[in-house]
Every structure is written in C-alpha cells, then in structure tokens.
Image 1 (tube, rainbow, N blue to C red):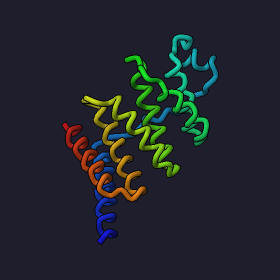
Image 2 (cartoon, rainbow, N blue to C red):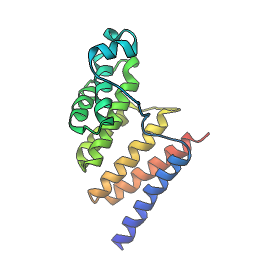
Image 3 (cartoon, rainbow, N blue to C red):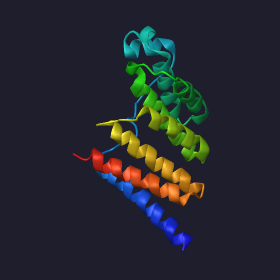
Image 4 (cartoon, helix red, strand yellow):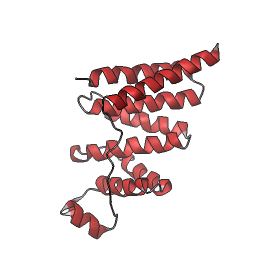
Length: 172
C-alpha cells in the first residue's frame, strides 16, 4: 500500500516536470562563458566596479556551477542568499543563486539544506506573478522530491499539488 502511494507521488512529480518542459519553463539560462576575475567582470558587464556583491557572487557561483565545481559554487551562492535585505536591482541574481543552491543541495541529497533554501526563496517570492511563477513551480517540485526522500509523503503530495497549481497559473 505504501509502495503504491510512493509510486503515485513520483508519477505526480514526473507529470509536473513534463508539464514544465512542455510549457518551455527552464530552471536557468546557460551562460556560455564567464570568467570570474575583476578585469573580465568590468569588460563583460560594462562598469564592473558598479556591480554589487550579490551580482558578483552570483556570477562567480554560476561560473563554478557551469564547470561542475560545486563546492565553490555553493560558497558563492550561500553568500548571496545570506543577504537579508535584497535591493530590487539584485533580486533576479538573488533568486537565481538561491534556485541553483537549492538544486545543488537536492542533487547532493542534502535534503534539509535544499528545504531551508527553498523556504528562503518562497519567502522572497511571496506575491509573485508572471515569470516568477516558473521559479515557484521548480521550488515546490524540488521541495516535494526532498520530502519524499525524507519519507514525508503527505507533505510531498501537498508540495507537488502546489507545483501543479503554479503550472496552471503560469499557462497563458
């Protein structure tokens, strides 16, 4: 009986991922090439001396992430999400760093770390509309996966339902 419930939950999660794929929702945009030294930041982003610490750490974390160097990526992304009051101009970088950090934790089976990061993101995204609904879909799907791994099936089912609700809200 319990096995059937787990299978049903995994199928629900899979369905949410399929719908996200079919609707063209992506977790991240791939950056083809980024170097993290100060000179490159200045030339690539025009006036890099004006980049905030949030943006710099997000860029550096993203570079490491794309080179599959997860330990330094986690370090940079953790610096970003440690910021309590995020300026509006840094909000996109904050969310991107948080989503990637959550995904790294989930991929490494650090379910508690992924859930903590997800809760921070949900708090920041409260009242989200438009494209931000895509992030919420991904976040709730990841929450559900982590909850399943922790044998919290009822909570996982609710998370997958929320992910499905955001899928419906995001559809045109």
